[in-house]
Image 1 (cartoon, rainbow, N blue to C red):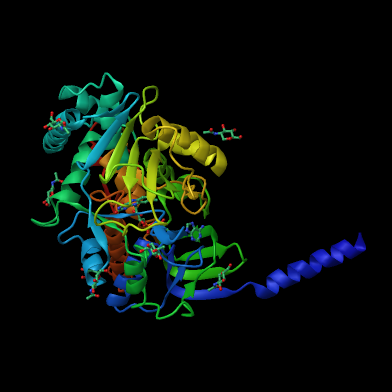
Image 2 (image 1 turned 30 degrees about the horizontal axis):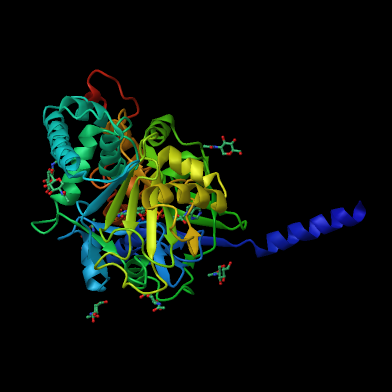
Amino acid sequence: MVKSTLLLAAACLLVAAEAKEYHTKVVILGGGVSGISAALNLTAAGVTDFMMVEARDILGGRAQDTQFGDVNVELGCNWVQGLGTNPINQLALKYNLSTAFSDSADVQWYGEKGKYNGTEIYNTLDDAFSKVLDIGFEKLQNDEVDISGRVGLDLVGWQPSNAFEEAAEFYYWDWEFGETPELSSTVFAAVNDNWTYSGFGPDGDGNNYVVDQRGFKHIFLEESKKVFKTDADKRLLLNTTVTKIAYNNKGVTVHTSKGDTIHADYAITTFSLGVLQHDDIEWSPALPDWKREGLYGFHMATYTKIFFNFPYQFWDDSQFTVWADPDRRGYMNAWQNLNAPGYFPKNTSTNIFFVTATQDLSYEVENKTDEEVKEEIMVVLRKMYGNDIPEPTHFMFPRWHTNPLFRGSYSNWPIGELDEHHANMKAPLNNRVFFAGEALSTEYFGFLQGAWFTGAKAGVDVALCLKGKCPRAEYYPEITNAKIRANIIHR
Ligand SMILES: Cc1cc2nc3c(=O)[nH]c(=O)nc-3n(C[C@H](O)[C@H](O)[C@H](O)COP(=O)(O)OP(=O)(O)OC[C@H]3O[C@@H](n4cnc5c(N)ncnc54)[C@H](O)[C@@H]3O)c2cc1C
Ligand SMILES: *[C@@H]1O[C@H](CO)[C@@H](O)[C@H](O)[C@H]1NC(C)=O
Ligand SMILES: *[C@@H]1O[C@H](CO)[C@@H](O)[C@H](O)[C@H]1NC(C)=O
Ligand SMILES: *[C@@H]1O[C@H](CO)[C@@H](O)[C@H](O)[C@H]1NC(C)=O
Ligand SMILES: *[C@@H]1O[C@H](CO)[C@@H](O)[C@H](O)[C@H]1NC(C)=O
Ligand SMILES: *[C@@H]1O[C@H](CO)[C@@H](O)[C@H](O)[C@H]1NC(C)=O
Ligand SMILES: *[C@@H]1O[C@H](CO)[C@@H](O)[C@H](O)[C@H]1NC(C)=O
Ligand SMILES: *[C@@H]1O[C@H](CO)[C@@H](O)[C@H](O)[C@H]1NC(C)=O
């Protein structure tokens, strides 16, 4: 008894002795694309007295890859979505990132009875989708309330009634937004599509798939070196998990799982929407309801790539393959062929074919063992290609939803979330805690450019605050039906 008490006391002393206290002007919480962008813009504005805290042992956040067989594959972001003047595309060009032009119309269709020609269905849906986006714009222009993607599709006469139409719909909608049309906003699907695919100049409409063996993260790590020359920079705290953020109108104190504290005049949090929704971080005082409603109301979608490597290729050469499951919409639907021309060089050991799950299917597979998931999907592959296909040599998938540092893959604007809710998600607390990250971009939520732009904006705003010129922040303490805009608060 005495002995264990002594041991406990000794352990406490050890912790106390190791706990460090830091003082800085700005603390950036999270070292993903948004955090790196904030650091770059603070630096550009002449602010060097800042720190960055990141739980992982490397920067990049959701830009992460891993070795799979002989090659590196991307676990998270994979496409440069929107080309032209998109800053992500500009970085890809600057660092000569290897990519393949992605063509979702280069697709083969498989159903219960084998291969089928899905082109007509796909073209009909393509046309319906543009009409839905037109409706979104019209609603925006006329200041009308939102409708779900499903209602939008209904309005333009797209009503899927068989497995082939449902398969095309999943491939077109869910595989992009990470969620069903029922859950998605029509107005903000239009806004999101417009800014990314029409907003980056005449060459902006397209997607490049990153196959670079340095990983997508390479371009962001290279940029981060402009700020932190090495990982030994004293301002960079890797392997450090934030547990609590205390704030008032004088400053911010950040607590870490190691018992360290960081006292700062300002904080920029870039934690994912999923992390903020999951209450992984304790706030003191608790976040106000106007902010919590905005955060909880937004959606963190899960998009899970499930990788197989086979001893040889038995699937088509097309970039994509769709499985139209007869019983369940979206079940093991969208397959990608990394042997397609322009992707990985074909060789004897690398033959990667992978499928993407979203939403409920993602939660289900995350809850199973790798072996169970592999067996389950092999059943589908045998339905598609026959019983003679070989066993995979490698199998792997990331669990984004259960990962406490992400709690999902990327955000999707749901039906029901108003502009005002979103503004509240983004609004700073006491002009001391600023919020950045992909989910906080009205134009580019879900995309890397959303992370990049919101991080830059937070960096610039905090630099202005340090000069006593804090920009006026807008938020809505109450969102009422009548005169929504009359309730705007300026401070
Ligand atoms: C599977 C998948 C596919 C995607 N596909 C694409 C795509 O093709 N194209 C595209 O443009 N975008 C894509 N995205 C989205 C893109 O990856 C994100 O928009 C972007 O990386 C988000 O950057 P961020 O800085 O906002 O957040 P994050 O990258 O999440 O950065 C936040 C950081 O905070 C850290 N952190 C979390 N909790 C703590 C804590 N308690 N203490 C300390 N640190 C903490 C995390 O480790 C992370 O590094 C995809 C994402 C996923 C997951
Ligand atoms: C972080 O932890 C990893 C392993 O847990 C270790 O290899 C690395 O040196 C640590 N890095 C820092 C900067 O503490
Ligand atoms: C860019 O990458 C391509 C293919 O990876 C390579 O052939 C080329 O030499 C590289 N160019 C530069 C300037 O590094
Ligand atoms: C599939 O259908 C489309 C449109 O109906 C047609 O143009 C195309 O030739 C067909 N493809 C094949 C391989 O039959
Ligand atoms: C569409 O994008 C353009 C930029 O290309 C922008 O000027 C315009 O405001 C956007 N429209 C909407 C409704 O978001
Ligand atoms: C297969 O290709 C990958 C990627 O280019 C390469 O790393 C690997 O060494 C190759 N393997 C063989 C057996 O050629
Ligand atoms: C995951 O597994 C747990 C425990 O086995 C169970 O309670 C939960 O309902 C499962 N969730 C899903 C989505 O299957
Ligand atoms: C961030 O810094 C870059 C480089 O200095 C600059 O081009 C960009 O305009 C800045 N972003 C903002 C939002 O000011």
